[in-house]
Image (cartoon, rainbow, N blue to C red; front, side, top):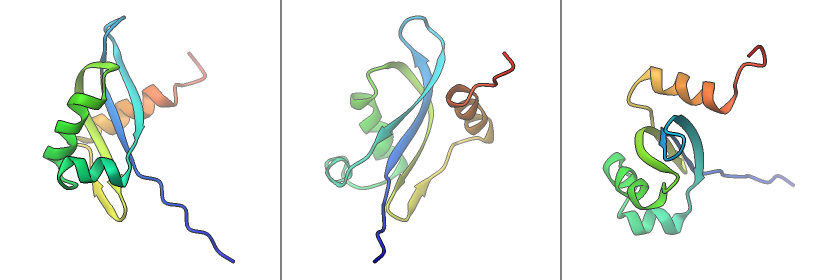
Length: 92
C-alpha cells in the first residue's frame, strides 16, 4: 500500500513588527484558501497574504505551491534570505 502526502504552503520573507527585522515563515495553504483567493496566481496569493500574514508589517517576497503548481521567488536572493532565516548557521 502506498500513500501520497501532498503539502501545500506559502513561504514568506518580510519585516516583522517588533523588533523590525527580516524574518521568514511558512504558512499552510488549503484548497479552501485557494478557492477563497479566486485561483492560484501570484496576484491572488499576494492579496491573500495581506490578510493572512499578520506577523509581518510587510511581505518582501514569497514562494508558494499548490498541487503541481509552483509560484517561485521573484529573485534568487529571496530564496537565500529565506534559507538563512529558517536554517541559521551554527557557527554564529
